[in-house]
Amino acid sequence: MIPALLRLAQKRQTYINILYLLLSLPLGAVYFAIVIAGVALSAASLLVAIIPLMILFMVGCWKLATFERNMAIAWLHVDIPPMAAPLPPKTNWFQRFTIHIKRGVTWKSIAYLFFKLPFGILAFYITCMVILLIIGLSLISLTLGLLVAPFVLLCMALASRKISRRGTRRYLLIVLTAGGITLSPLSVVNGIATLWGMFAQVMLGMDINALRLAQATEMAEQERAKAERAEQSRRELIMNVSHDLRTPVASIRGHIEALLLASEESEHRMLAPETLQNYLRIVHRESMHLGTLVDDLLSLARNDSDELSLNLTTVEVGTVVEEVYQTLMPLARRERQISMLREVPSTLPPVRADRQRLVQVLLNLVRNAITYTPDGGIVVIALQHTNVDYVELSVADTGIGIPQEDLERIFERFYRTDSSRSRTSGGFGLGLAIVRDFVFAMGGSVHVESVVGEGSCFKVLLHVVEQA
Ligand code: ADP
Image (cartoon, rainbow, N blue to C red; front, side, top):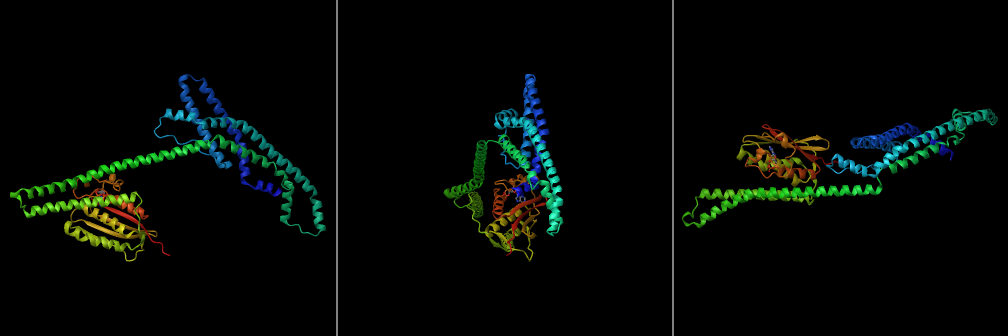
């Protein structure tokens, strides 16, 4: 019991409680004045002025109640639920006002502010009495203690025991607190603070059922928005896919029909070999194009349905760079006179990746770099150990560049910049979406820097495998 009382005096919380209770009086007086003045002014004002005054009053009370709530949480360490659920989006001021006055916590918080003054008076009075009582009791106890001190010293001398400094301090503490008894009124202060904390919990927080309902409503709203977004992107996907299918399908149909017609008309049975070859080449190219679209869509669909099972292993990125370089370099040089370079440092830590996906990521980036670089340009694939955790794989080109306003969107599905739309060489706008999905799935990140007319640089960060 006595050590518990002594511990009470050593606790920081006890003094915070005392301060809180003492402050309750001036704060309560201010709240009381505001509440009374607000009610009186609203009642006395002309009809036209009632609404604005009431709004002002409500807002003021809400702010004060929020301040009180935060103070009770921080000072009294009570767990108070939120005051209200977030307002539905797109509500005007009148709707906000009506929702606000319908909430129970609005009126409870005004009542709280109103009661703060009587509580403050009582708390101030009791706390002052407690402090005075402790001082009084301590003085009495100290006086008595000092009076008996000579006898204590005498007894100790007779028992030939030494008087240590620590022993003197302990003696003084015991006589000052009468062994802790003079501190017992402190528990009254703590009790009042606890009770007021419980009152604040009831008055300044949402009702637990209302809180649960609000949480459930919010979750339902999030799910609804998610479903709406999914539906919207499904619609967009169908529109984009149909649009992108139309051109190659129409081209294939047109050329096949021409070939059929030629084979049916006896006098034109024999098409010139170069025309025939040209038609077949176009049909082949367009069917390849369609194949790419289907592959891309499948990759994205797998990723969406979390079917993308990655085979994460330890990968030497240098070998991936070499593979992609050897695949695309001859084509780039022969068809576009583009010089491809690679910069691979001799010592690089292995990364954690799915090798096959990483090859696809790099193929997509390098293909884009070749596609969007004019003939005779340069494409550089580089590897760098940027910091302990990452290896940076970059693909830089001296191409047409990407306008600043498009940079944020090029990783979206089916997004193509205007300049690439007008070019026949561009794809379906899925390549970078796949790059982003794959890189994220491997725990990395991708970003791009670009200057129109000068070139672009795509940078992929890959996790270094932690060495055991
Ligand atoms: P696409 O199949 O059309 O190339 P991507 O998703 O790979 O689709 O790229 C989206 C768009 O980003 C492209 O249409 C193009 O406008 C732009 N882009 C991508 N890479 C480059 C690059 N290296 N230089 C310039 N523009 C690029």
